[in-house]
Length: 185
Length: 184
Image (tube, rainbow over the protein chains, first blue to last red):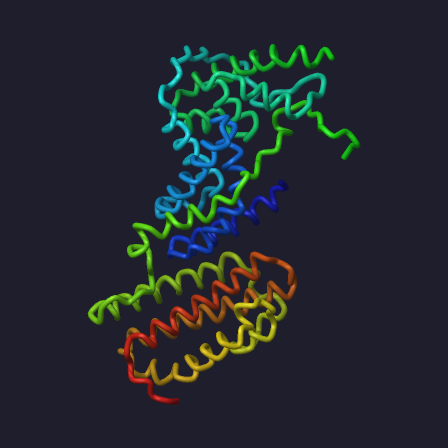
């Protein structure tokens, strides 16, 4: 999305949030219609189960409605509801993954995106992402697909930034090893 | 778009961020929104005579805030066509809600008795009502002006309908205060 369109979207969202805060369910439905794709997409990628993802997306919007008073209109509604969705998904998981040793700070930035030399079918990449362990997948989905920074991703997941980077490093290595056979075709 | 049935990509950032769920989740969400917290969120419902003035004032403040915010922050003020007559916007929109004859009749009736009802209010409340209605009408004009430039904009149409609903809430709340319905 172009920056101008993004700004326009944010302004409309803020107008709708303002109305929803006053109890206007139609305005909130409009927000739902605008954002459900990204929220459900995120939930699906984090849970790998369409039915659970639907539950999580629903819960995220209900929690958003109840928490509208706490929403800062200066920030993006989409990011805010994403944070809520991540909380819902994490809350539904029975056991957290064993903690990963944070990567020591170094001067080398860890790329958030993941780029292949040879194009691969979308379904194959999605399947490879889905096959990652929870912690690595969470970080890769948030930073690699949805474009959140290391800091934002760490905050959403409730982990240290170093841990986040370590998970991303792990995710990228696993993803590459899984996709390399595809790339040889 | 190529002829290949399955698109190929090289980067995670090329993956579509949005995925549509298999079914519409809104009905279930809406049902839960209206369940327990509805009463605390309603801004216009008048439950008992002793709360009437407070509820009316609260609803007017909310409508005013919404109106001011929309007028200043969202719509291109000063655009050509902004000087639409206050009662004129009905002619410029094809939104079914606004063009519904029953709605128009009810609105006309409420506007007809508006002055008499305003006259029966305490001065402070009267000032709030008038300020709120002025803000709402300004918002209507601004939205109409914006729609003049972008007639197919669904969000603008929805905002316009919402603004008419805001106006109707204020007018109805004013009527429900039980003020004598003197004819103007």
